[in-house]
Image (cartoon, rainbow, N blue to C red; front, side, top):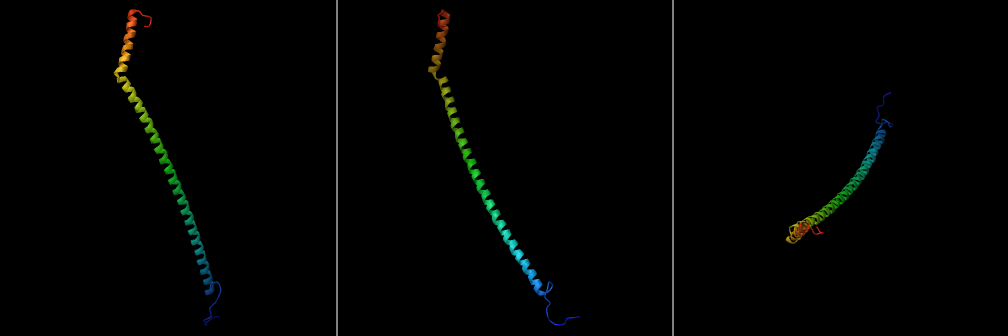
Length: 117
């Protein structure tokens, strides 16, 4: 039987079925977009937390490096000061004269047979 009138058939293939399907697709799309946005927010939070941790680690590493450099500088300065003082003592004519006098006294004592030789 052929239908020639303008009545629309409702059902899964009719206009109301298409509208319902379209509404379900649009609702699913909105839900998906909301979930994507939630994921984006979570990812942004994770990235910010990672950046903060990286900054904290970098600041700590730089502080430790500065402390090591300062300590090394102090130790090197103290060592250089001791070396300079030791070199000055060796160059000091008074200390050389005292050592020379001591050596001459010991030699003289040996040569003369004194008991302090």
